[in-house]
Image (cartoon, rainbow, N blue to C red; front, side):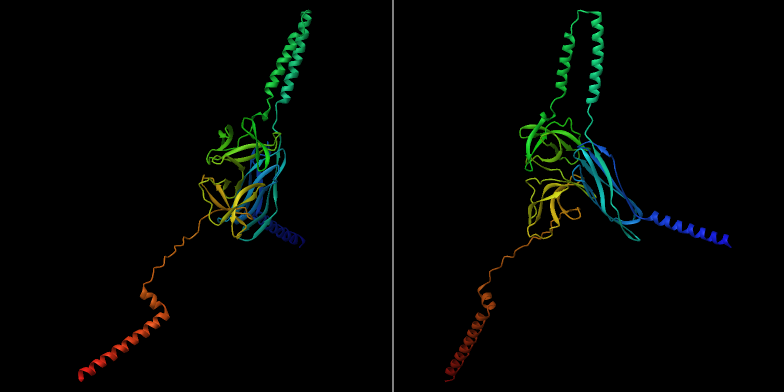
Amino acid sequence: MTTRKTFKRAILLGILFVMITASSAFAASVSISASKTSVSPGDTVTVTVSFSGKDIIGIQANVSADGSVTTGGGTVLYAEGSTNSYSQSFSIKANKVGTGKVTVSDVMVSTIEEDSTLSSKSVTINVVAPQTDDSSSSDSSSDSSSSGSTGSTDSSSSDPNNDSTDSTNDTDDSDDEKEEEEEDPLAHTKELTVDGKTALLWTDLSDVEVFEGFTVEEVEYDGQSVEMMKHEERGYYVAYFTDDEGENPTYQLYNEERESFYPYVTIDVARSYVLLQPEESVEVPQGYEESEITIDGERTVCWVQSDGENSDFVLVYAINEDGEKGFYFYDTREGSMQRYVDRSIEVVEEVPVEESAMEKIFNDPVLASILGILGLAVAGLAAALIRILQKNKNR
């Protein structure tokens, strides 16, 4: 009897375990990963957010960097049918040395059976200073010194009359070579004022890592040739700036037509957009006035409705992945983009046709009444005149 009860309990526990395992296998989950977790300032890291679950029909989440060591991020929005997995990638920029963190938060996943709110997940990105060859140079110098000392001892023992003139000359030559090699990296910079702050524009990008998908080209600015990064497909230019000590790098978009710089802001949603300043030939839609907005810690120009309505939506000028420029609505709450479509209606004003004298009389009740009375009076006079004429004939 005891054996049968134990066997039944084992079966029930096994069924319960299978049910729990199956439910956990179908539960929605989120993960975040980075293409590189150790980078240098100026590098770009691809961060991928992945979702999994059974019959996912909707996803919403926010991806954000710490805003200091690293910047970038955007919004995950999915509502394109049922799927068991979905991934979206974002470009994260490493700004300065330190430990950065990219977090996916406010995660909501909807399946056919239920809606789930998932916990935040993060990935750490270490931004380290680029390695130099100082150690190898010092090792080489020490080896050279050791070999030189040995050679000097040997030659001294072989030739007691030899002096140290040759070794002194060799030292002077090596010092000159070091001075030539250690050229001031800030020699190829130009001091400018950007957003009210003094910054150094680097005119030579030999020591700067170029973004993926960009090439280095020379651009004429203020009568000087300046090297900038040019996007191979979209054609816009990005300039490299630092502070007066050559640290804290920032990137600015360059407007050739206006010869001006403004923050390099990228919005990554379902597609990637880069905010631009409109050319002088581009007309801002009527009913909007210029303003400013902060996106990923950068101040950039935008346009808001003059009447103050729809304050959550601003108008920005951007270029998409296909190289198409235009105005877009930017949702300041959701971080999403939508192409602007001009829905204004042309109103045709009808020119009134001048009325004739008779139309004016008949359209005016007073004049119409007077005319009616006059008509009756004329008719009465005519009738009386006819009667008088008939009486005269009868006589």
